[in-house]
Image (cartoon, rainbow, N blue to C red):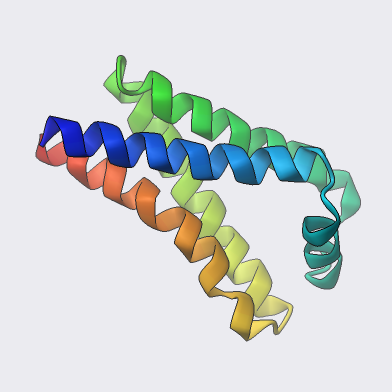
Amino acid sequence: MHIAHVVVTLLAALMAGFSGVVLLMRAEWIVKALTDYSVPQGWWTLLGVAKAAGAVGLVVGLFVPVIGVLAGIGLVVYFLGAAVTVARARWYSHIPFPLVYAAPVVGALVLGFAG
């Protein structure tokens, strides 16, 4: 169980970290999506930092579990908020994207509690 927890946690951290970095780098495809969803440009840096910090927190959580749990909860809330934002923008076909990023975080939390 421990190996599965580590692998899923690292996958979740990689995915969240990637998502945060592309936002901080202002990748063209993410900028277009955030513009389409009407996310204010002033929020973009904070949102990217939040995802990157969550990714770091997941990795630190492998050594300090309470940090991992808090980071995981924060990322799940973040990605659920992203799904709501996409739905409010009426881009229903894009709702699965933030949920795909949330899934390994949920998996990491479940495996952490099971182990």
